[in-house]
Image (cartoon, rainbow, N blue to C red; front, side, top):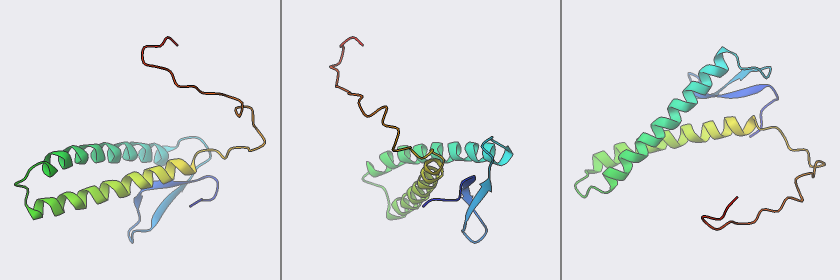
Length: 116
């Protein structure tokens, strides 16, 4: 989904669950810096939940209630991560297809330990 230029998708929802945006002029204002901090917190929480998920899923004594709770938290973390990805993706500048200066670059795999 593409937004109007100068609008940034924020990492939180409005009162009725609608998407929230802030108008930007390219320089990070207070709300943009707050959004950056919130995105970082959301992604860190997602990493923590994954760690808990590994332990809980490996526990044969985990109860159905614990697993449902975990599933809800994983769903929330995934929704947050997808919103962060959407927001960051919308801020990546469009590529000019006429600019083919990097089309001739060749990347070849290196073996481990091979000098650079």
